[in-house]
Image (cartoon, rainbow, N blue to C red; front, top):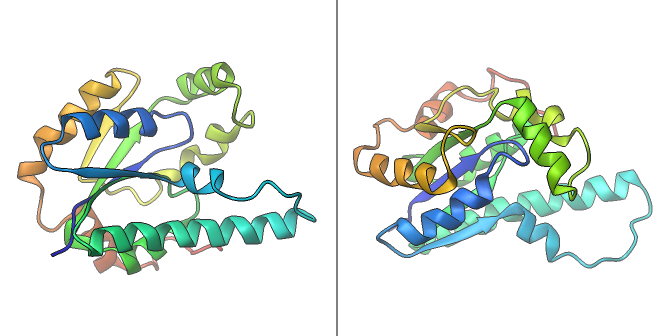
Length: 189
């Protein structure tokens, strides 16, 4: 039996990690929070030769992260995923790896001016990162549920998601995206 994958998709600084932490405290069943940032933090700190080597390491990290999520769910674990579809290939790979009927795709929205304010306040992200991701992250356009972190706290967003889970749609957003295929948006890798 496959576990449920609650996939939080939003730009950097949109509030995905904060919502994920709240979900773990409000959901009735045991869940694991898997964040792509956690995987990047596990990497050794050695200097990389150049941008090409950095890009290759990043691609392998993201791809390995997708497989780790799929593996946890395949073992029957419920997983809250903190990631983003800032490049189309990420969505395509997740569509290939995850059981589409068991994915709840959550759009984590926040207006760009608020994202930029949060980004500047955090100081741990490159300036303009959220702006660069803003259009592509939600380009696929299909969600099971969306939350807005500019109007709701992380706990309120988590509760909205929890209340939604018993009435998940069929087909799910992931099933609809899989059925549409990847021809709608060109893949980039």
